Image 1: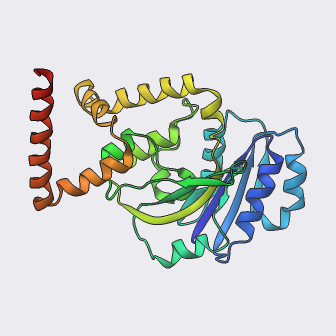
Image 2 (image 1 turned 45 degrees about the horizontal axis):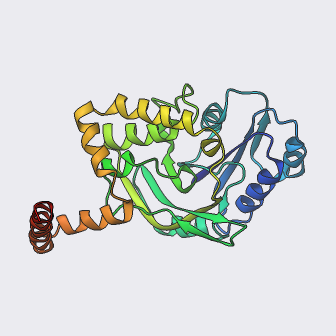
Amino acid sequence: MKYSIITVNFNNKDGLRKTIESVIRQSFQDFEFIVIDGGSTDGSTDILKEYDAKIDYWGSEPDGGIYQGMNKGIKKATGEYLNFMNSGDCFYDERRLELVDNCHFSTDIIVGSDYHYDPIKGQGFTTILPPRMNMYALYKGSFPHQSAFFRRELFNDCLYDENLRMVSDWKFFIQKIIIEDCSVSFFRDKVCQRDCEDGICAIYPDILDKEKDRLLNEFLPHRVKNDYEILAKIDNSTFYKLQYICENKKLLRYLTVFIKVIYKLYNWSKHH
């Protein structure tokens, strides 16, 4: 079995149907489909019964939240790579899994982009991926787990931290990529389409901020964290271009001269 597609759902029957349809219509079919429902009372289980023949495993019982549901799915999974396409999310189109597989990635983690769609405006935007893996990219926030694929073995020694409500997937990325130096490939195209509204993170921004700060304090010494706070003032697109310039000796010389000129002009303006 090449892939395990894991979907976690709670009281989101319309989103669940959309996700199921997206998964079962994939042109590439070498995957198992696992759905973990948290004891929904909105009719979600009726949807699961309707699609029972298309789902390899599903269960419905109360649990401790999204990460406990994802961990339940991991324990059931037998695929080489795991993807978490949660309720309401869907593959960008019917060939997404096929296109990812055609790249023949062999790294521990494969990361693609999300397409954030606003159905009211009829438009959206795509997640910007860094030119290469670095801590800055993860300092700014997590990669989209809906558009990522993880080797099953990565979860042998640790699962998602169920004590965190919103950032456990972010913690897992930092632990595996930065601390354990797991290999990463970028699929530089869209894997998942999701609504612009970010669900629970948008509903409880204070909890999100507290968990993010707690997580960064856990992994970064405070002086290093302070440096990243300064860098974080630069938007991702600009910073990734800056990173490219700094890794090119000729462009870096131009940039250095330009910064010196700007700094001199700034100091001159303060005194005139």
